[in-house]
Image (cartoon, rainbow, N blue to C red; front, side, top):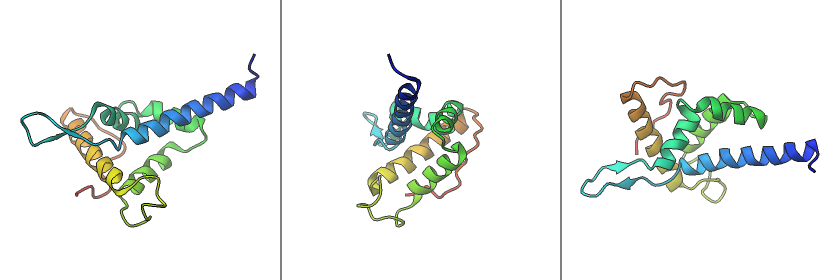
Length: 131
């Protein structure tokens, strides 16, 4: 039988894994649909963006809060870090330049799609995501 502390630690590790996986999924490379030159957002990257910034963001807010992280601060820091090319050398950053570029592309594509669908979101394009 698990004691309460062991269960809490296990739940925290699970929530942290979900958040980390969503961040990693947000950096997945888009793909080209056959016969077009247009890059398409992968379903995992789309879900990750929706988890952090879209209609599912209350879920990520809950997970981040349960982990002791302030959700708005975390999400703002994520956007800022992914927009930074020169703040860290690739050997010191958790994400390399290519992953950061993919995040920016995915965020911009998701944002355009969500605006087309009539979404209004707390986190707008505060940073220049042009590549």
